[in-house]
Each structure stands twice: as C-alpha cells, then as structure tokens.
Amino acid sequence: MARDPVCGMMVDEKKAAAKSEYKGQTYYFCAPGCKAAFDKDPEKYLKKSEAHGHGMQHCC
Image (cartoon, rainbow, N blue to C red; front, side):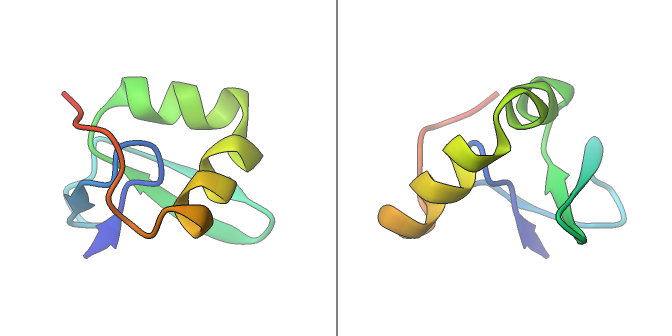
C-alpha cells in the first residue's frame, strides 16, 4: 500500500487509478485528479506530507 501524496488516502499500488514518477520515486494516486494536482506542483504536496504527517484533506 502507498499513500496518495495529494489527499492522504491509502492506495493499492496494483489497483491505483494513476501513478507518476518524480525524482526517481513512484507515487500512486486514488484518482486522476490527484495525479493532475501532483504533476502540476509535486513539491507542494511533498512538503505538505512532510510537514503535516500523512493525513491530509479528504478526497474523491
């Protein structure tokens, strides 16, 4: 399981709606909208994840 960096949901890597590669790491998303938000500004979501722990906003 992986945590969607945009919304914080747990995502099964094998069933993820989308994924992105960033700085050599793969990120998995619960929905295409989360992927689009991440792709637009990955650092924004990675910094939020580090600063606030894992739980973020509710998604989809």
